[in-house]
Length: 256
Ligand SMILES: [Zn+2]
Image 1: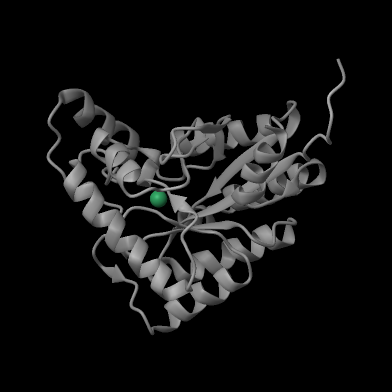
Image 2: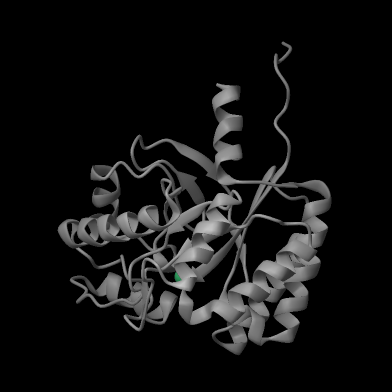
């Protein structure tokens, strides 16, 4: 059997998490580092009011920067609303998950559908009014989605979401990609060492056709992390074309 059509290119999907006025200098640094490693347009995961202390206001200088990035082709994802887990968790499993995995940043883990819908709607409207174009999708803080979040994304017709292990379309349920995301955690020493190990493994083993990679503002505070990011991204960018999520979705549309 021969396959018709061309094989889609290997792609690198890089994203900057926690884009907020609160992290502006760190975001600039990450944009610079990624660009020097070959990634000109990383996706941005935007938080409308980080910890309820850093509201993005229409008409502000930060809003103008978001718009310029979007006009340059940067994909803007809504990334929670406050990013902070403010919910009372109903089950002990969720309480354990929330405290062990996220240090209290799993905002969308414990929200009911109504509240999740209210926050996604408000965040989406804010970002779309600022950038003048649709958001690329919704990515929950710490990649943690409760039932309420899943239901809200479906109701609101969100086109794209991702967690640690996959990228999918909440509106249709279609799964686009199953592969782990490479990330660097700097919140604790142990986690930092383990994520540096993951990144160095990622530089040596065969990589999936589409590689996802996420960086955070805290990464710029640790020189070892920053240099690991630089080396890892530059290495992957030699074999994988830095791309947008929409390119990856487009490849699959061509293939089917
Ligand atoms: Zn985040």
